[in-house]
Length: 386
Image (tube, rainbow, N blue to C red; front, side, top):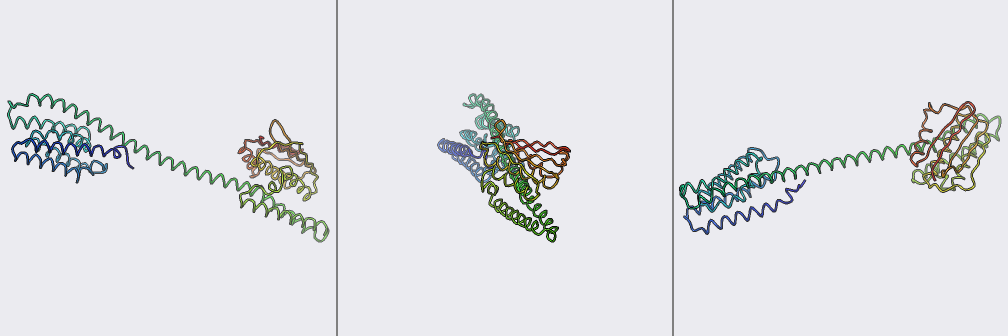
């Protein structure tokens, strides 16, 4: 990952090039001893080549070894010292050398080497001209200022580098967190879809197959004794199988429930009630308020599946002699009530998937489910907001 320090590294490259060219030009134009000029220009050129061929990689590569960094830093210090001892004008190269040392080493060792490099200039003046040199009284206070300035600049450079690397690490962690969140979201979506399909299968195909099995058993027992009843049950089994096939096709095509696709919610619930009456012979009373508000496809699916599950429970468990189904409007919600006079059960200890599936469906659309049951029968109430 490219961090801020790498993105703005071209500014440092410009400083390096300007410092090298300007210092080398001043050394060459100084008209001093040709040998000293050549030594100084050679040291400066060697410094530039060392950086281009080796130093750039060390500065940019955080994984480079500590030994390599120290060797390069000492090489920089030696070449700067040689250039300044040979020609005092070479001191301008410190504008490049000091930041380079701080970019290569940690702050404390870099501060020590930078101080040594800055002190090399007045030391070279003393070696060349003695303590009575004409520029020594100017160089000493300037050297003190440069030492302080160099250390402060090094501190700033180190802070920028650390902030840049820290920001890059934070971005990497955020990207990793986002990838993890995306993975968990996909898994949650997959789990929710599996649960939805499980509810769909339970509320449609499984109930239809249960009806077919029940009708097939009835046909087997009636085939010899009551052919007319067996024929009627065979017709019901065939109709239930066709309805199951239609539901399966609708589910595969990710469409609305087939009953709703063929008509309104009122008609779909009525068909479920009529089917129970035809299959069991139990009278089913169906009531609907005159004007039901629109609740959208999601709400209609919840009510239809609730009716299917409740009536299927009556068929399988209630042993009821009368059933009533009612769709009504209550406080801005559409309420489905299914009541029977059967044996009842304990809703708190129900272990099947049906009630859990109905409650989960209702919660997804902001609705509620309540079940009251006892020896005198069961009433299931499902409300969906309009």
